[in-house]
Image 1 (cartoon, rainbow, N blue to C red):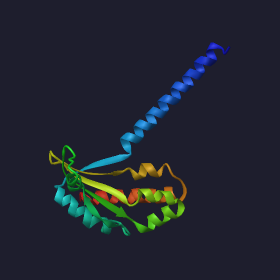
Image 2: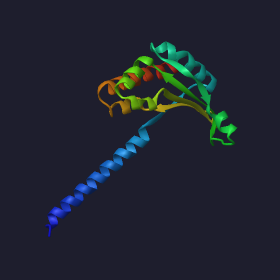
Image 3: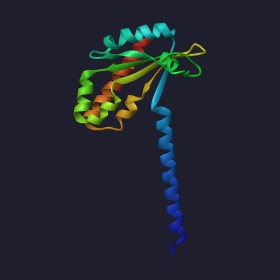
Image 4: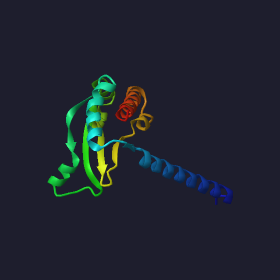
Length: 163
């Protein structure tokens, strides 16, 4: 039979591990997707996004036409409650993409970067995207390095949208 102190210590260790895992999962869920409110009308934000992506940081472009998300849902008889307009933009920097895919082909499933521009029924405009700087910390080597650069470039583009 195990001493009570040892059992208590093991119970504390298990409880601590469970709390750490719960905190980690909560953090990932709450920070994996970031939404930035833009002080712009939807049309202005869309125009600036299309203009700024290829001009703020060299190498970036939109190789796939944007998707009108609200229209795509409507074609299938669906509606996103609370959303007036939404478009998804596909951003790519081929130099970063080739480094990442050359190192880890499975990462191709995350490419290109998806940014959603949406307007709520209340008229508020947001840009949402994956939190690439946070994700970069989960990878090492060429993938982590490229994702760190992507995160830095994305921050510069978002700042340029509101200037």
